[in-house]
Length: 119
Image 1 (cartoon, rainbow, N blue to C red):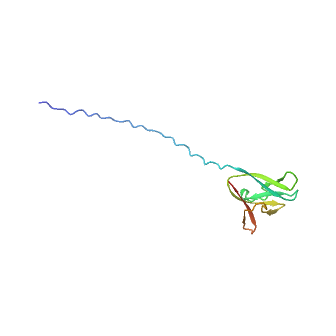
Image 2: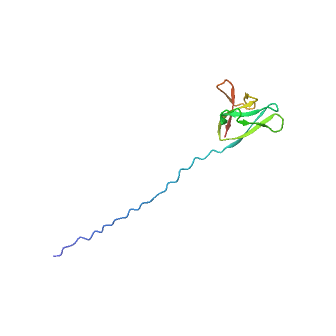
Image 3: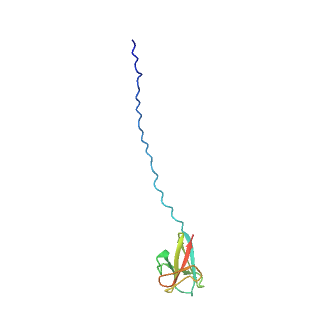
């Protein structure tokens, strides 16, 4: 009598491979693009004229405005990121809203601040 043998069972061991995936460094948030904004005001020639606002913590001597032609027109260009800002001109120490800007808000002092929106 013949004994049938069971076929041999082959055991296969699979090698585990470890895949290392490098994570990309987080991208830095894109810095908003600054835009050049020119502020202009008319005042008597020879005055000390400055620009103050939310963009420079209302520093009354933060941004000197220049009278380039001696005609009483003072201007300064500053770079601002998109947003809404309040500002005033300081002419010989007197705070003045922009007479050419119809956008304004009342401030805590009961006077008006001019408003500009940079897009």
